[in-house]
Image (cartoon, rainbow, N blue to C red; front, side, top):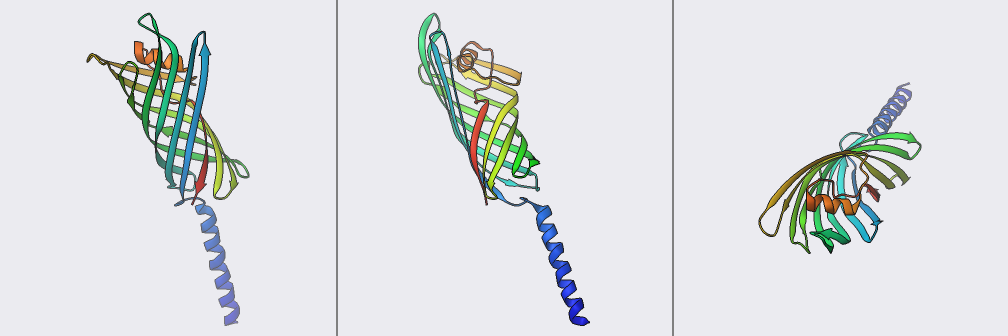
Amino acid sequence: MKKLLLVAGLAFFGLTAQAQEQSKGLQGAWFATSQFGYQQTKSGDVKSTNLMVLPIVGTFVTPTVAVGAGIGYLNVKADNVDVGGSPVDLNSKLYVIQPLARKYWNVAGNFYFFGQVATPIITGKEETTNLKINQFGATMSGGFDFFVTKNFSVEFSYNLVNFSQTTLKYDGGGKTTVTDFSIAHVANVESAYNNALYGSGGSLTTPLSFGFKFVF
């Protein structure tokens, strides 16, 4: 009888530990991903490209909530942009620091939807005009995450709401500060340059990005 009670007790504690582990989910797990964003537009003679590479490291603080931060690079180019009545090729080399938080919801099986709030900080300069660019803001985005295995997934996200404040310092010493708010942001690189150069605002990050995530 004692042996039977002992076996039953061990089985009970084993099932309890397994249930706790299952409910814990990804809590405490770390993840590493690198988001890639690329956009190319053409309007008349103006050809514009925007490339973003953003490695991110984070951890799950609950089974469905993760926090992290990314440090990456943003390159924005536009050819034949009208600056002061003359066509100019513009090339901005910028660096991005982006803290973020995510909430995940299971859609079906290994397929998840997530909402993300991020606060990107961007700094660098446009090389042709020597325009120094500093931007900080907040973005809300939605995305999908598909786990190919329990430790590897593919994710896509799109910016839905953007707030940004951009400070522009010109070579001659002048400075302009621009504040912008947009919903369902549709980025246009030519517009981004015009916004930066002429003072109508706009987020410099790419609206659509994808990446590969490793969980460990």
